[in-house]
Length: 353
Image (cartoon, rainbow, N blue to C red; front, side, top):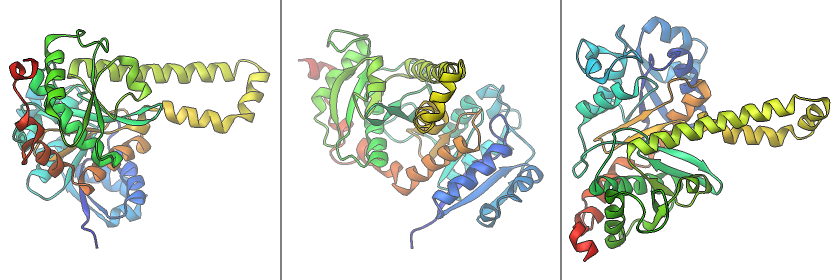
């Protein structure tokens, strides 16, 4: 019998806390019955929600704390000023102590990253963490990173992102050699800043055994699915993510307005409502919820703060899959094992000579 996947939840994180976290965990449990949960937060609020979900209650343990991290707290404030007894900190600490396999939170992103990095430390060979998420495309799904963990990055940082993103794609998509592209303002080799051009040279020279580097990808290539993994630094990645989410909501609003404008439009909607539902699901950012903090010596997943129960369930699903398919070991092997593409990578000077 397979070992249970132990999931620690910051039950107080996000805009509505236990009202989304607990029902979301219950939904995920129906999809992954080999899960068990540690729920950190206000016991009264958590147990009020658990009463409606007996199956989840039977496989959960509640750890009480009345300390929470506000969505407005600065990361430095979260690390100081008594936040080490917060529901967020305790969920991460459960991963550190081995009590849980993964922590999931919809709370303050900066605080979650700061606490995770302080508590779990970085994997050897990684200077900074990254947020990676699944991005729906015209030909399936892609992994995109970094979506805002840190700003900027040199060629070595982009190479580490490529290696980690490749490992995540192998786990999620069951692809032996995922394709990897660098997000850039053009596909020509002369385009982009020095760091990205240098990273491209290094990735071409790597001849990595676990992924294929396909070169530069422009912004519209993300949605086309031009590569299984799209790599960029956090500033551009976060802008791309927010622009895509905003466009998806805008398209949904346009569609809703068009379908209710006239009685003919309403009739057309009724005749094609299944197709419109499928389109709406594709445009719904919550269906791709769950950003993985890569590069840490532990698995942490960030959910959208404003998500509903269904959206939070997707984030829990991501955490489950990262553990069940041993993402951390695969990343560590690709970064630091024998034949590691980073260890074998030539210097920038060697790559261009």
